[in-house]
Image (cartoon, rainbow, N blue to C red; front, side, top):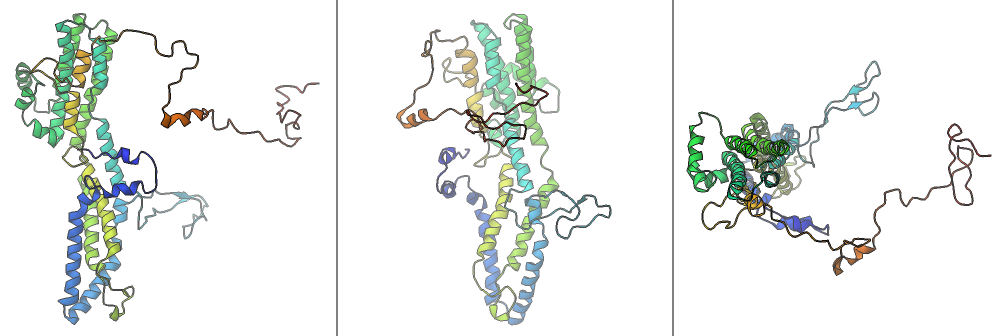
Length: 450
């Protein structure tokens, strides 16, 4: 179930986002607590071994290892793989500190600048988030298609109703076939074609035709072909009254079919595996080095930077929370068709958009697509004059809570309230007159009046 908190942040107020930190479901704490406990447990085990188990000679060797790991852990490019890649910038010669000077005094390109601590979303995570949102935009929704079907396929008789319902059922069948191919939640709901037939998306005769098609590829597109053939048949019978209406219907089907295809390609073409491996290795190897390099040493030994002896590495844990948290964000969003808290509600979309009602009482709980093309077909309220038919100024009423909005003036433009300032004479402008400043036009456009 998607975690929605929009109403909690409807208005900006003191500590608005801080209230979201107490949520557990869908939170970073729920994703990261196991890794954080594991990291802290290993750190405390090494600290206890250093303090109570090792001999004096072993402690000296361990202290050298701690200093070595702390010194060279910064060479692991965690900020590079999670943080932003600063592009090459063209900087003129002589500007900037310690930049190479070009002998021809032309702009030279500086090297990429890598920040050691990044406070903005990393390139890898940004890539995953963009991919996540684009996949949602490719969800095959029937709203536009059902409006076109209701407006172009005519007939109040049983056959006209059958045409419209079958067309939308074919669209729903195509969506179910592609969703069960990419979503584990939908596949668990419809693990076989038998379950699809039992749910009413496909008849047994259609199943025979579907299975008799000799193709080794995913056949989610087959119902779209059935849709096209049925629309052409409806045109021949006059249910679709002209070719323009048929063209509009098939164009909307093409958009719907394109979204199904894009979901298939997003499932097929992942973020390159080497990129994900590099990011994961960089993060985990960095904190493996931090397990040793961030240990507190005996202050009596006089090591530089080890004047304080604590038990819990607060800032190391915060760093682990941020960097490993970014990695867990990417892990959750890279495939939004699973069963995580913030994954897409694919089964809800099927129930809302496509679920046909073929059993039980007629018109019992029809879903959106069937409701639009069946019950709502040619169902109009009586035409009558609206409330503001004779009003010179139509304005909807306000409640007591919003009455103050009536006193606010309408927006006229950002320069509407600017008062022109008087200019000095002699600069193609005349002196301010008794009625305020005015501007003269150039002589070649309008001669000065005599």
